[in-house]
Length: 253
Image (tube, rainbow, N blue to C red; front, side, top):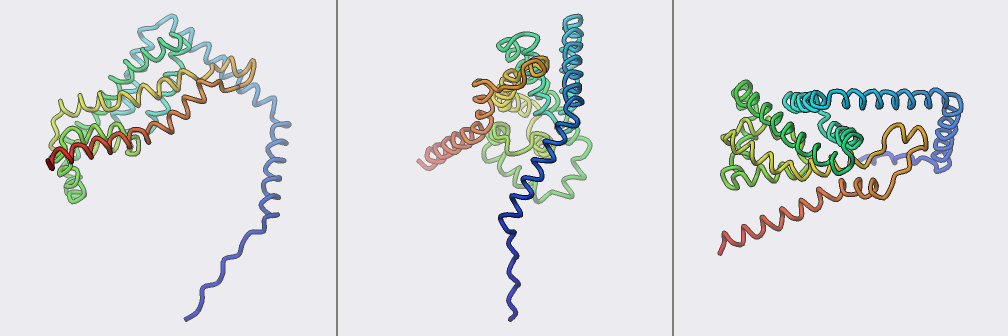
C-alpha cells in the first residue's frame, strides 16, 4: 500500500515576506491615493448632511420610506436586513439622539421586519408551497414534528437565535401548518431583543462628518455594543437550553 506524500510546509520566512509585501503595498497605496481616499470620505460626509437636511424638511416621508423599503427587502427575502438595521440606528441617532434613535428605530424596524417576514411567509405558503413540498417534503417533516411537539415556542427559539437566517425561517414556516396570526405575534416578540440590540449598536457609530474631522476613535459604548453582538447568541442559546431542560423535567414528573 503506497503512502500518501507528505504535505510541504511553508517556510516561516516566506509568510513574513508576504506580510511585509502586503504592508508595503498598503502603505504605498495610501501615499499615492491618500488624497482620493480623503476626498471620498468628505463626499460621503456631504451626502450625510444632505440626507439629514432632507429628513428635517420631510420627517414623516423619510420614516414612511424607510419603513416601506425595509418591509420590501425582508418581504422579498433579500439579504441585508442586518446592515439596514445598523444603518437606520446610526441615521436615527443623528436625527433624534441616542435614546430617541433607539426608541424610534426599534418601533419602526420591529413592525417593518415582522410585516416583511409575514409577506415572505404568505408568498411561500400560497405561491411555492406545492413545489417546495414535493422537493423538500422529507426535510420539512422535521419542522412540522417540532411545531406539533413544541408549538409556537419552537418558532420563538428560531427567532431569538441568529444562527438561522431569518429569511429562511420565513420561507420554511410558510410550508408548515402554523397560523398566520401565530406567526405574526411570535415573530414580533422573538425578533424584538435582536432588533433592539442591533439598533442600539447602530446608534453608537459616529457620524461621517466626525470621522472626516477627527478620525474614527471607537468609544467605550461602541466597543461594548459590538461585544454584545457576539455574546448575545451565546446567552440566548444557554437560556433556551435551560428552559427546555426544565420543561422536559416537568413533563416527566
